[in-house]
Image 1 (cartoon, rainbow, N blue to C red):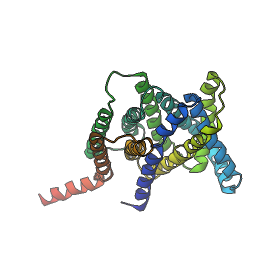
Image 2: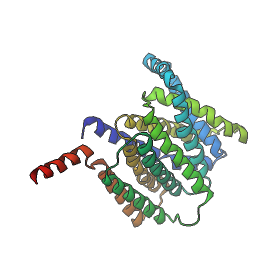
Image 3: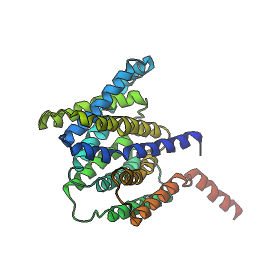
Image 4: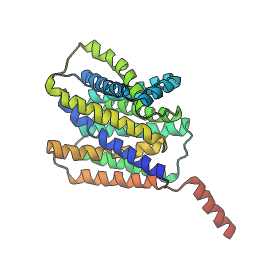
Length: 306
């Protein structure tokens, strides 16, 4: 595996690690006086202000922002999918369902979306092993969901989580299709448009100002999963296929489960670990699946021998 691929793998796993904190932090904020729309809006606003402050001290950052204006429409679309749709519907889903259930539905919908759409719009070829990896991922997620007791009819929370997953899956595909690169300056644009989009539902619900006690959680939510998570994801997309990035980020439920155990003292059951192990195996299978070129060369050698 090339060095860039190795870095891309670590970036995608880093995004999963950072995104694993979203549910815990969001639940904490929702339990205060903040609504789900307010949580989504404020975390995006804080992230945007933090990056804007950094740009004042970096000339290269400001130049990159100017350079990205040539792709402003593509950025606006991706921001709508990856910021507004993901943030708004995911955070709202946490008001109806437990964190693991939302994460499982979200990532499941995102995986299917990325897998199908990357084949259509990115022309990414899928080896049979990747289909096996996808199947194992779904099995692992189902086992973890069943272990959490997420059984029953399709709830409102599940629908909201599914819409969030659809948005995130399309975000991954279109970010790759439009070849959006730029690191933190690109994230600055995502946050800018995100603030504009999220202000609409926030203002419709009525202005709610956060209490001082909620600032640490809001800042953590803005810095770690919002800035850090999106930075790792967008950088990983410049090094790996969109479908592979999505599959690697499916390790997020593992991190979310660990964080829940450490922070909330929730018990981790045996079945949950079984699902986690299956997900890890699926990730390894996806990462080390044989390339089409190598496969064709092998077939050619066998034909020569015959």
